[in-house]
Length: 161
Length: 284
Image 1 (tube, rainbow over the protein chains, first blue to last red):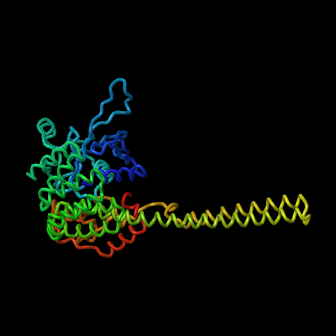
Image 2 (tube, rainbow over the protein chains, first blue to last red; image 1 turned 90 degrees about the vertical axis):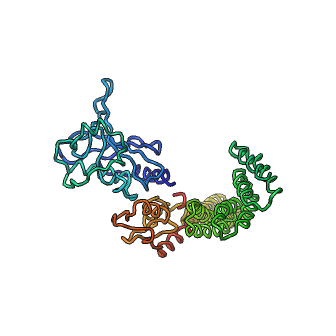
Image 3 (tube, one colour; image 1 turned 90 degrees about the horizontal axis):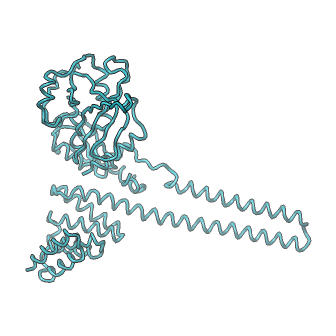
């Protein structure tokens, strides 16, 4: 399959140019990448924070979507506080970092999406949000879910969030 | 008996003992020269050993035994195309690969992706051969021209020496003229080299494939583009996989099937023309 070649090309393009607020953290192997994103407008929910996204690619990428979720990094006492990466608050983002976003599900994915376009979608999903809350049933979901994100049938009925 | 030899050959192949495996397949073939899998296995083994002439023979033998029309021959035709590439017979390799690619599409064979890659490899090899001979020719022309300029300089210098010897010019004039001749000649050579550098544009121009020739799924240059009902073109293999799996158009998400994909011949011609002049694009 073409996963590694395609990812190599995406990386090359991103190293030349990236949209503001998006940066590559880790891309050495072609199975897992990490990206940092920032919200650029003055939405008070996300001011002065940087968030870390983890991408996991299967051999069928880009025919199948990558798994994308936020990961939390808590700096230890010896590490500088700037290395902190929280999970952003959002009615579609569970506190374990799992994101409920149509384009990341098997049904909503399109192979013309890229790592860059996913980052931009998530960036704008945060920008547009005004609700300081987690999805309903967050604590149950976080304790009991063992399924992989793309296999979960999220409800995408709430388009105005 | 002959199948036992093949099994033992397969075992050695798995262990990486290609010479041993080749020997066992050869024994199997001498016992039963009508069994195509003996030839395909030996062809694959010889591919590992880069014994291309042997791969060619075996692959052709297997294709004959299976029959040209049989989908079972597609793998052997792929081996054949690789062997021809190894033997630097790129045009033949291209013809074998493109025929097999088309047959593979019709037969929905698992070899389509391999064959598609080999088609592009062959195109690249054809371009590289042409490019090498073009550069070699250019270099020969450049060398000849530089020699002419140097001969001309030598004649001028000899002439000048003669004038000095005959007392027609003085020592100072001689040195000045000599310097001028050398500088002229140097400048001519520089101009000549600059002209050749510009003319060999492949080396100085930036190597970029235009976006409209690049497949939005694999990000590689297309060689068999098809167009969706929504008007976007993709290379056949990736879009076929996606539409079969999802049942929708990747841009509009409207329900879509493989039968909705139509060849885009104009774009195909554009890709072919680009590849003919820019074989490097295969690796881009």
